[in-house]
Image 1 (cartoon, helix red, strand yellow):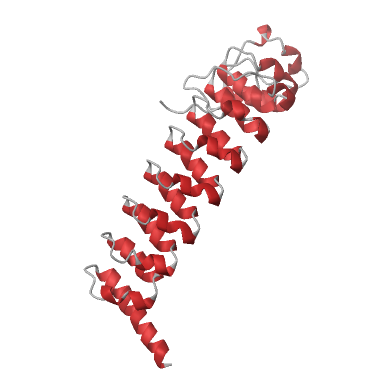
Image 2 (cartoon, one colour):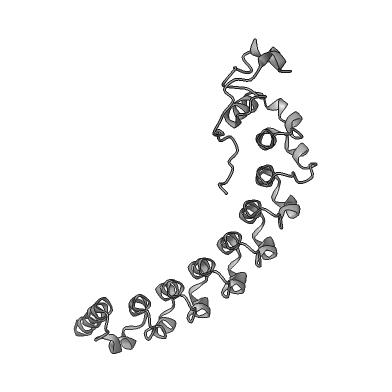
Length: 255
């Protein structure tokens, strides 16, 4: 199902609402609204957003409205102290907006929300030391957010994550001295990232990897004394780098 976005125009948009029935029609004279463009009662996210942006004092009164998009847009403009008192909304889009506005120490109720976008919002905002609560989230995209922000000292807890994209993010962030934890990862793309950032002694252990790109990364990181065995590697790009590094090493010794 396509993601719903707050303020996006529906496929069939009500261009203009009935101003005669609008409880806010007095705003017309003061240019607080404009039929078909800036309107709170139209079934149009864009018109509602324009109205509440111009008249934010009406947002609080819309938080219990029957139309999910009106509630979601109202949550953008309502006073924070009002949002803090609201129970989680039945609609996930509203909850996403609320989770994006609440203070980071008040997001506990949304940590295990049924909607992954809500949990991703939380994972992107809460204090890094609280991310451990989402380490085992069922959705890999949530865990990706965790891997991007988790303190380095706790990243090793994610090296065996079921999803390779999560492990790739871990490989990008682990300190070089800890990358050996992923040296035998089952996925070549993870090992490539690892080999490209490893300390020289650890990179030397990757020279026998079955994936040629891993070996290519390793021969560029490993000490030159350890790479001679790949001078005739089956992959031309690997052997070319080995020959170049060996030649540079010999010339340095002659200088």
